[in-house]
Length: 499
Ligand code: 0RQ
Image 1 (cartoon, protein in one colour):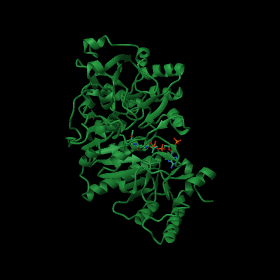
Image 2 (cartoon, rainbow, N blue to C red; image 1 turned 60 degrees about the horizontal axis):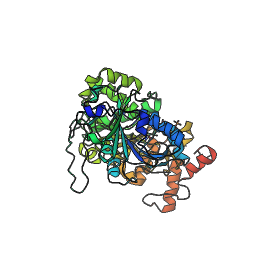
Image 3 (cartoon, rainbow, N blue to C red; image 1 turned 180 degrees about the vertical axis):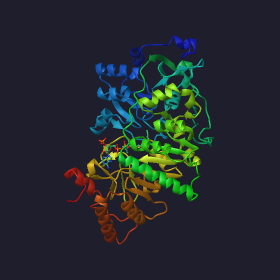
Image 4 (tube, helix red, strand yellow; image 1 turned 90 degrees about the horizontal axis):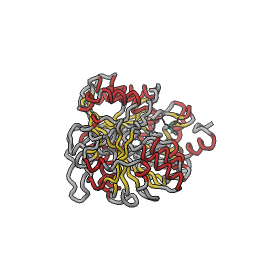
C-alpha cells in the first residue's frame, strides 16, 4: 500500500466505507469525482446507500457528469438524493427526476466548478469523495480514469474522503493535467494553445489535514458495451466525411482538420470510428470523453493527440487501454472539465463540435435534452460548451424516431438547448443542411429538403408556407396555435403524422 499511499501519516487514515459514511450528514452537498462511468467512487456510495436505507435521509449529489450504477443507481433506488447536478444517464435517476422525487439542475459542464466554488449552487461542497490511484507524499491526489470536477470540489470542500482504487493501474499517474483558475476579476488567460499543452500539475492539490479518511476499493469502472453502429449512423458518418472533405477543398479547413470534439452516444462513436476508415490523418482531439473510436484512431496512426476529461471506453476498449497503457499515455491527457470544456479554449483552438440532438426545428434550434417538452432524457452535458464556441458546429440526429412515429425535424422544438445562432450544419441520414449565413426562411427550406424524412417533408413545407402567409412573410414565421401541435398530436395519438 505504501506505493499508493506515500505519506506515512495518511497510511494510518485507512478506514472502512462504513466509517467513512459516518461523516455524511442529512442534507449535505456531496461533491464526487467521476465523469461518465469512469473514475467515480464506488464502495463509499454503496455503504452510504445502506445507511440511507436504515436512517432515511437525503443528500445533494454533485458530480462531473453521469456516473456508474454504484453511485447514481444505488442512491436513487434508496431515494437518497434530494438534488442532483449537473448531468445523468442512469435510468433510476431519470425516472426519479421525471416523477418529482429528485430536483435536477442541468448545467453546462464547464460552468459547474466555478458555480460550486462561488456558492451559486446552494452552499458549498461539504464533503468531496474522490477516487484515486495514488496519494503523494504531500497528500496530493492522483486521479484515475476521469477528472471531472474533482479538483475544484477538493479545493472547496471542508473534508475530503479518498477512495483508493487498487484496480486502477498506477501507470495512470502522469496522464492528468490539473489546473483550477482563480476567480474573477483579474482571471488570467488559460495559456493553452495546442491540444497537448500542459498548464497544471499531474495531481489534485490537497492538504494532508483535509483528508478525513481513505477507503480501499477494488471495484472497476462500470463501463458499457458500445451500441452497434446502425445504418442511420453509417449514413450520417458518410455525409460528415464528404462534407469535411468539401471544406478542406474549399480552403475553409486545413487538411488535418481542426481539433475534434465529439459527444456521447451511438452516433458520436460511429462518427469517430468512421474517421478511422477515412483519408484524414494528423488529427487532434479536444473533447470531454475519449471513446473507443479515438483509441482506434491512435492505433491507426491517424490521431496525434487527444485531450479530454474522461476515458469512456467499452469493456473491450478499457481492457485494451490497460494492456497497452504506455502506447496511449503519451497521446492522451485528462483535464478538469472546467478546462476540457472551456469556451475560451474551444474558441481559441477552433474546435469542430459534433453533438447529437433529440430534435431540431426548421429554423435551426436544437433540443438535446427533453422528450415531448417535459421529460428529461440526460442533460445538456458539454454540448453547449462546444456548440456555441466551436469553429464549425454540427448536430446529428436520425430524421425520425420510434419507428417513424416521431419526426426529429419539427416546426418548433418543444424545449431548446442550443439556439439557431449556435449551429452551422445539421446532418441526418437523409443528408446535410449547411445553414451558415442563411436567414431563418432560407434555413427552413434547406433543413426540410435536406434533413427531414420524406414522410414528413410535405407536412413541414405546408406548415412553413401557411406560417409565411399568416405572418406576411415575417422574419421567423410561426403559427402560434400550431407550432407545438406535432408533439401534442404524438402524445394524443401516438404519431406526429397527420392522418
Ligand atoms: O430512445 O433508447 O428508448 O430507443 O432517444 O436516441 O438515437 O439512441 O441516440 O444514444 O446518440 O442519444 C441526444 C439523447 C442521443 C444524447 C441523445 C429517443 C430514441 C432513443 C436515444 P430508446 P439514440 P443517442 C457530450 C455532449 C445531450 C448531451 C450531449 C444526449 C433515445 O446524445 O444525451 O450532447 N445528448 N453531450 O428513440 C423522442 C425524439 C427522439 C427520441 C430520439 N425526437 N423524441 N424520443 N429519441 N429522438 C457528452 C457529455 O456531456 C457527457
